[in-house]
Image 1 (cartoon, helix red, strand yellow):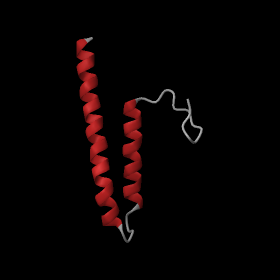
Image 2: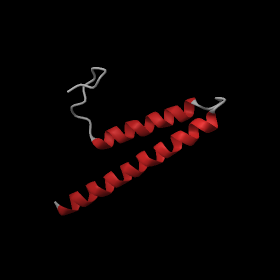
Image 3: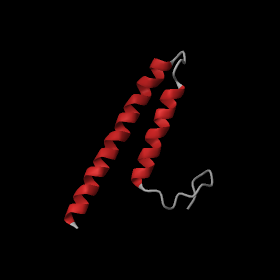
Length: 70
């Protein structure tokens, strides 16, 4: 299976996806430093950052519960 850029997407886990997305948002925040619209950009990126971290936390909680059952 490939994404629209031709990269393989067959074995990436949900956790890996979330970590990659969090890193990309961090990169955007870093790149916006000194930008005329920095505050505006960060005000839109921050909710995305916190939502991704919330999802990662929920994923970890769910995986821990699944491992307890086994």
